[in-house]
Length: 342
Ligand SMILES: [Zn+2]
Ligand SMILES: [Zn+2]
Image (cartoon, rainbow, N blue to C red):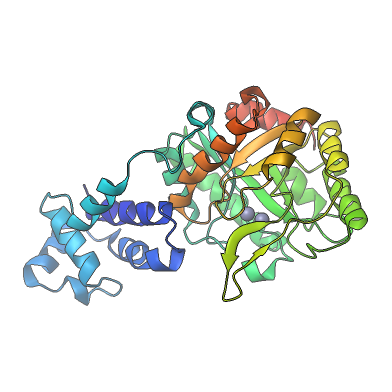
C-alpha cells in the first residue's frame, strides 16, 4: 500500500466512524503533502529521520508513512480496520446492493472537507457508478455557497475530472436553497444545465405550516427540481450545551408528497445519522402516495459516503420498493429522468 493511500484510508475510516472532519484533517493534510513526493524521496526522509520536517506531517502520520514504505500495514490503520465489522448499521442490505450512485454530496467548494476528485474516488471505491456533486447555492453563505460564476467554474473542473475517471462519472448538480417564497436560489439557466437539482429548506424552518407548505410545493413544482432534500429539516442528535434537538418543520405532508408525485420529484431519504429524514411515519406516507425516492448520504467527507446503509435500513423498514428509488438506476436512466423535468 502506498503511504498516501494508507493515510487516506485512515481518514476514510475515521470519517465513516463519525469523527468530525477537523479531527481527520491531520491525515488528509499529510496525504496532500506527500501525494506528489516520489517514494524514493520519502524513503530518504525516513532514513534521515526528517519526515516530520515536511509541513503537515506529524509524529503519527510519519509513523504511518514509514511503515507503509517498509511494506507493512501501518499499526494505526490495522487497528481501525479491525474495528470494521460490516456495514455501519444492520438491515437494508439488498437495497444497498441495488444502489448505483449517490445524488447528494458536498466538496470543499462549499462546506465539505475534501476536494471533488477525492470524493469521486471514494465513491468509486465503494462500488458506485456515479456520484452527484451538489454543493450549496449562493445564499447559504455560512456554507460557502457557490455564486453563479463559481458554479460555472466547477462545471469545467468536473468535465476535466470526468475525462480522467471514466467510466466512473461525476454528475453535475446543486443543493439549491428553497427561498422563503419557494423560489430556488440559483439562475434558471444554470439549473437547467445541471444534471441533478436537489432543493432543500435551510432557513426559517419554524415558518407556520401553511406558509411552509406553500413554499415547499412551489419549489417542488419548479420544473428544475429533481429531488426534495431532507424535507423536515430535523436534527435528532442533541447539540451544544443545551442538548437540544431541532424539531421537524411543520407542513402539510400529504399535500407536499402529492406535489412530489405529480411533478415527478423524488423524496430524499437522507442518510446522515443526525437527520434520518424523513421520519418513519412520513416516509411511509410518501410510499403510500406513490413517490419516487433517492437514498443519499449528504456526505461532507469521503468516509461519510459509506453511510448509505442508514438510509437503506430505514427504507427497508418502511417498505420502499427498490424500483421507486432513482439511484438504483443506471446513470443514463437517471439523466433521462432528470432531463424530462428541465
Ligand atoms: Zn441541506
Ligand atoms: Zn447537503
